[in-house]
Length: 417
Ligand code: ATP
Ligand code: MG
Image 1 (cartoon, protein in one colour):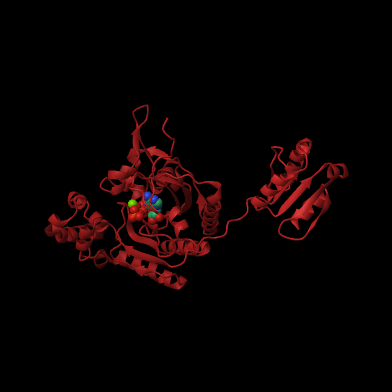
Image 2 (tube, helix red, strand yellow; image 1 turned 30 degrees about the horizontal axis):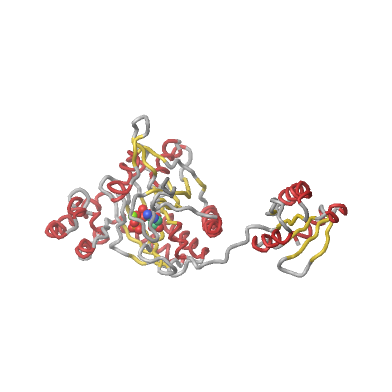
């Protein structure tokens, strides 16, 4: 039989690397909660239509990257390529807009896109993201951008660049679309195949293309920011002023478009420059999508959100020293004492210690080797003598202490000290 292997571009995370993941996830959860967000968990599988309608038919994700299949009932399902659409669906399905005026949600979990795997680009990858429903901004937009920056600082990701832009809304978009089309049409023949095909239906997509010939043409395209209506412009000015007041650094990048159809007004991206990141340097992408909830058949609730790729964060982080997985490792002098060892281990675990032992009946020497390797601070020894005296021998693997301690409160106190 051929060797069994994981799907290409989908990675296993083994215990040796999970400590860094936990650090990122826990820091994110704490930060989001500090800013008033609460967690939501939605299914990994959704009706295909959800993503086609929200992300847009003429996008890389929907055209090329989705894992779509029919289930046994003939229904088309898709592994979620991102989190925003699922959150919006859940928000409406559970009638949340009628229950509270503003909702702040965060999520964390795997996403699926059939892309060409590279460093920082996988087919299963994890995103951490936030969504705010019901606040039209721009202060809410500034808070969100600021939170991302604080989060990256807390992780020790330095040397990041925050780019912002405004895509305007309603009329602005229509007027800009016409101006852009008028500019692009004469260049049509020189555009990439994808862009030629998308030109009439979605000219904005051309600006977000990664193809070199498209980027060259896009560089001289009219800028949306010059076409902003009065209210959109005021919104953008207040966003910038609030970021200034917070001291959050940013740069306006009028060429920032991003790959999804649903964005309006505020758009932002955080790029990393440090670490091991390489070409896939976008850590975080986000923006406002004031039309989506209404397009889904709900009330006109404005919304904004972002998503960060956890693998890319890890690539851009300084290598932090891993934390030991155990507090105490119990060495058992003789196989007959293993039942007592199991009872002692449970006492330690009930007291909150991470405790373990090698219960296969190996030699003391081999058990001590495992105690050393485990990184545990304490080695505990249970022998006949100790058992008879109701004691445990305690050895501080990072200090000098070695001696017998009464099994019970005294032992717990010693290990806490
Ligand atoms: P890119 O331009 O790199 O393809 P994107 O615009 O498709 O990114 P979004 O859909 O905005 O990305 O997703 C937000 C974040 O999720 C990205 O900034 C990135 O950190 C991460 N991400 C997206 N696709 C992948 C992937 N295939 N593998 C790993 N991380 C990813
Ligand atoms: Mg992409």
